[in-house]
Amino acid sequence: MGGGGKNIVAFIPARGGSQRLKNKNVRLLAGKPLLFYTIEAAMSCLEISSVIVSTDSEIIRQLAQECGATCPELRSAELSSDTVTVDEVLTQFLLGMEEPPDLVVVLQPTSPFRTASHINKALAIYEQEKALNVVSLTKTKSPINSVGFLEKGLCLDKFLVEGELKDIATTLQPYRLNGAIYIVDTAEFMRRKTLFFNDPNSFAFEMSALDSVDIDTDLDLLWAEFIFQHKK
Image 1 (cartoon, helix red, strand yellow):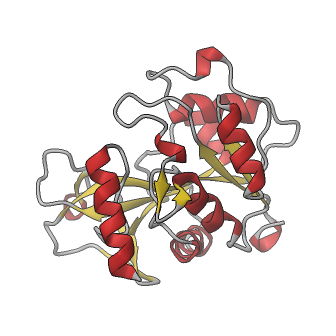
Image 2 (cartoon, helix red, strand yellow):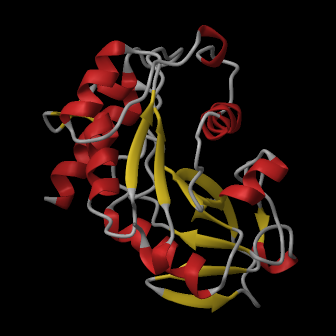
Image 3 (tube, one colour):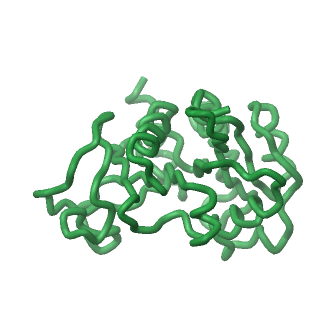
């Protein structure tokens, strides 16, 4: 059972197919499958009650189980296409549960540098602020693809930096979603059917650019290999 008696489930969506980088969730990074790093991070969080991998691939299912995660029956074809969203997959997963968790931590396997420490800090702000959702962000140079200037109130009005809650009052720095961490109250998610929403009880958690690398292309994978060696 998670912190405060809450049932907290880590949900890892790991589809077998990929348009841009074939079999990306099982591609090797520093000698280990990409999926391994996310499962390891989730399983290292004492707050998390269980780690669930959702996939349409038997290969990924076996890998997930070998890494210690739970992997229920394979996704249907309807939930495995390129156009299906994580929101849709998570909705169907929760509808199929007899006892849904109190909250869900969605962790995409394409974020290998998101660690247990990041997840714990994001969960801390969720608990401290009695939040409905927490999402991970990173700074971006261009506002074109950003979620807005935090100071303008177009996004979340508070965020966690190095373990401390900060008020955004002066910065015009644009931020973007990095896809690494989404924490959401289960009942609120089922009401809204989306992981990202702006509410007075919504909060952001900032991650560095290096920790926010998202593997989507061969170039991303090469860059991640370089970062991995640098971090060592």
